[in-house]
Image (cartoon, rainbow, N blue to C red; front, side):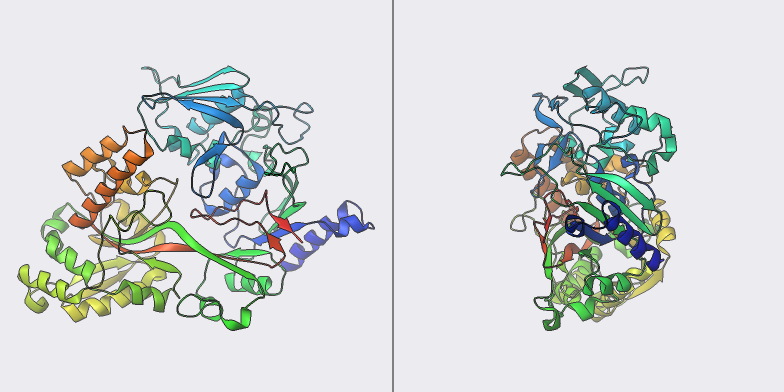
Length: 541
């Protein structure tokens, strides 16, 4: 497979003109996707691998900057009504779809294309995992979609059934990319292998499980701040080496330009205990880290017979668990410093509303844990039943660490190991009383995390896996959703986050961090807390 990958790349670089110096100077950005890619259709961009490649191939109305502020993309401007229900977008008239025999030469994007693209994602027949993005689009009594209107080629109106302040940010997701009706309807499900978009790169070749090649879009509409046409790279090549250690070695050899993430197979070779690059790699490549919108946690189921008959029903026991282990030491020894201890709220670092000076969670305090056990009637843990913690093999080291430390304060933990798919299913069905979980942001707004504790979102139909229910919390959630002013909404978000910490339906373990490695000849590769890979402004020497 490796030989095929290398041969494909070699043939690509030589394909345009085998003998010229200019061809040998082609700027090709190479990265690896160990998990593979199953589709290039943005309607199915539900994991990082697909999101990355769809970001190269497609555009939407807006795009988010590194601070998650909505910026113009195909929409050059927009207005939002005072009640937060009506969004009116003015579109550029110079955005072209990638060339394709099914399209007229110079086929421009228009507002009708967006209506088609959004309706396609909403259509049950499409079965897009992103259909939830449009759940709030206004519909008539008979269910007909009335909230999408192309007034003319360059004016799009979206009407919501109720205010939802994060909606503008949702429109930056690949699910909301514009696609050409002519091509989609011709290929049907095979659009996954014949993607036509408007993005900075266009599809060239895909040998599944071997290599994916994208070429520069010579007609791309965006320019940098100096007025230079984007993108600067000539091509993007994605390999599919499944073994992460092998991919790391390819990077060290200079055969990949970029890798993201820290794997157990090479973390100790790469980093010291405090997260610093080991001296042997100093100067050989760049390393960047930063917040990642992922909260790792343990949840307590808050209803059902298991809960009623468990010591975990007592908030003092839940708080004792929160106080009873050292998150900082855990991150240093088990994650080489590549995470931030979860001593604030459930909402992670990296979001605009995050403020650790306002929201206070739990830090290591074994004496406080012992006091809480005593107050609950279990001095020194005497008489406290063994508590089962359910987890997966990937997090066994974290849970064993907690097991050891909690035993020191008098809390005995029994670890139950489940395979990942089975574990997720059991959590969704409320079959686990004390379970490991994680929440990676679908969109860059704290509501995405706070919705996990809203009572109307009870699993299995919603993300409230703990079945936490609190009238004050629900009232604050609904108040926040009525606020179009970000600053006001963020104040409410922090009150909600503190309430979660006070009621302790979860144990926040840590907030993940992005780790990126890239070669010294790569420039202007921007980092962000959603770990998006945007290559349109990247330069390669």
